[in-house]
Amino acid sequence: MAAESLSSTIAAPGRQKLLAAAITLIRRNGYAATSVDELCKAAGVTKGAFFHHFASKERLAVAAATHFTDVAAVWFEQAPFLKLDDPVDRILGYVDFRLERINDDLSQSTCLLGTLVQEAYGSSPDIREACFEGISRQAGGLLPDIEAAIAERGLRLDANSLAMHTQAVLQGAFILAKAADGTQPAIDSLQHLKRYLALLFGRNLEEEMP
Image (spheres, rainbow, N blue to C red):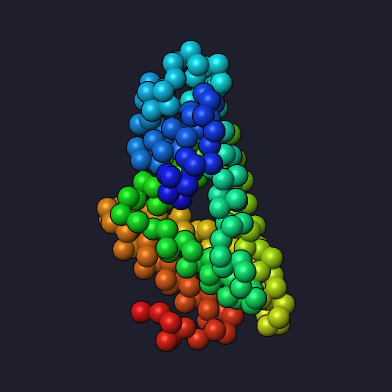
């Protein structure tokens, strides 16, 4: 999600400024490399104000993961693909929506949740749980359309695991993009995901995709 989209949804005072700073800096630099001093500077608050709102950097990270998830939910609820009639079109539209938002600034194209959990899954159960909840919520947004598409086509598939698979591809695509220091691996991965979903639900995309 673009930084501008996140920032526009956040009001001014201390706690909200720190959440916005955490989302931006952790996505750019990683959790371990983001210090409390840097967070305070980016948010324009004192260290005393930081500890007034959050007992530790870990507590801020947990709150930032939850906030990021809440903002993403609003973002997806307003997406144009949700107006499409066919659940398969909505599923494929979701992938297109994610593709459209990949840009040259990898730090702001990729996901806070994936960045956080890669670093902190073993050292902070609270961060891990907040990230899993967020990723699960994003998968859950696709679940009704996946269930409808499966039912309409009489398929025998686990809708929940398929919804989670979409998130696994997304997070893996972001890791590949970071490793390559470029967006093309992420774009390629999401295009493959779209082809896979189309084939699964009997949709021919030969004329639609490069």
